[in-house]
Structure formats: structure tokens, C-alpha cells
Length: 342
Ligand code: MN
Image (tube, rainbow, N blue to C red):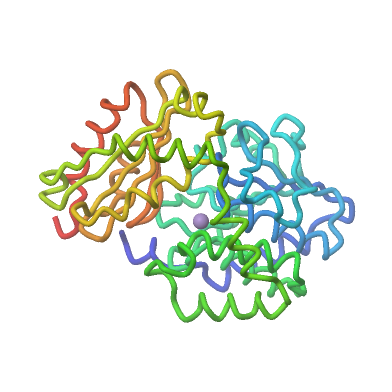
């Protein structure tokens, strides 16, 4: 990674973003987009920023994401969900598109086509691998979550972060920091959390909904999928790889939607004997959504980028093709090239 790629937005970038929003016509159509299979940061930063735009008087507001318009159950209490429309109903030529938490255009699926027809494209993100695909890019790889960037821009726009906006930004911040456990949990993260909590939002209720509630079918599904996990101590230059997979048939058998598998990586990555963990989730006949985590010996974003995905040093993902074994074989090969210090 170059020093330039690691640097966050410049003052000129912030000024450009403020100017784009302030320069919107009175009846502006604004479309907010986040990445496919949206997580807490994608939806939270998108809806929190959307509610801020509404406070600024933007009325023709839509928020969307590619794929089926189902919001994962743990995120169904987020404020601002009324802004969501299915991908097909999204404004074809908005005055402004705001992309939240999407590491690349490919993460926008069919909605990537909306960028060319938009009056302006503003990218809010924190993935180091982001190629800065917007007209104005606020990409800060040092930010723990996209919501950190969103809050800064809302402040610069003079938006008062109320409890509804705060809840969105808090869910985003807490999910992307693993409930304030990851290395990215800096003093600034806790300072932001403190500002958000000061609006009166209830962290106990939010955490129970977002992390600690799961249908019984998902509990049984996890048991089955964890039971087939494989440990490969020699992989990743001897640092170890642990992986498992889940098929569409597994989901159907337990009557569970795909998003329940998002939490699975947390149960796999705790394996003491492996630096790298991986969950391969079937999304089509020969298509797999892959989540990877590292404890530090491997830069998994290098693996993901090599396989047309993206992410962070310690957490990344990509879309794999073929069988689950094919996908794991492709990861195994890239791991050796992604050893830190190699
Ligand atoms: Mn994020």
C-alpha cells in the first residue's frame, strides 16, 4: 500500500463533498446506495447519512442496495428504513448518488450503472483498496467504519446528529469494530460512540437485537456447518487456515435466509490454531460469497483483491466460482503470496 492510498480525505475533498450537497437544487433527487449483502456499516452509514440529508431539506430521497430487497432481521429496527426501495425502483438518473461502504463498483451489482447517469457521485468509504470510483471521494482507510466518515461529513454540513441518526451510525460503528473489540477501536472510535450515546440511544437494546438474537433454525444450522470445519495447519506459510462452507441446501433444510451466515465467521475465526479463517457461502449454482479474516500474519485484502474482491488487511471478501473446494484451493494459493513481510 502506498502512503497516498493510506491517507484519508484532504481538506479539498471534504470541501468538495460539502459543495456537492450544498449545491443540490431544491427538488434534487438523491439516491443512496450501499454494497450487496449489506451489513451494519453499509446500512447504518447509508441510512444515517440519508436521515441527515432529510434534515437538510432533501425530500426526493431513496436508499437501496443490489439484490433481493430483504434487510437482515438484526437490522430491521434501524431508523430510516422507510427510505429503502427495491433496486428496480431506484431513480435511474439522480442528481446525486452517494455510495456507502462499497469497496469497489463491483460491490454495487446492477446499481453500478446508476453512476454514469448521475449528476454527481459521492463515495463514502473506509476500504484501503477502494479505487476512488466517485467524482468526489471521501475514503479514509484509517476510519474504523464508513459511519466515521459519514458523521464527519454530517458535522461539516451542519446537521444535528439526533437519536435516529445516532442509532444508525452506532450500529455501523459497533458492527465494523466487532463490538469495539478489533484493532481499529481507537480513542476516536470511543469518542464517536460517546457522542452517539449522548443522544439517548440504548446500547443494551441495540446490541441484543443486532448480535444476540437468532432463530433456533440458525442455531442448528451453525452447529452443522461448524461441525464440518477443516483445519489446515500448514496453509498460509504454516500460520494455519480454518475454513468451512454452507450451501443453499443447508439454508433450505433449516429454513434460513442467507444473511444468518454473516455471523458464522465469528464462530470460525476464534480457532486458536489458525491465523486465517474463511467461510464459503453458496449464493448460486457455482457461485460463493467468501468471507476471510486474519489475525495478522496474512493480509487477506491481498488475497481478496487477487480474486476480484476487496476489503481490509484483517477482514476481506470476494465472490468465488466453481465448487467450494475450487474456491478454497484458489484461496490457499493466494495465501502464500499474501504473507505479511513476504
Ligand atoms: Mn464498513
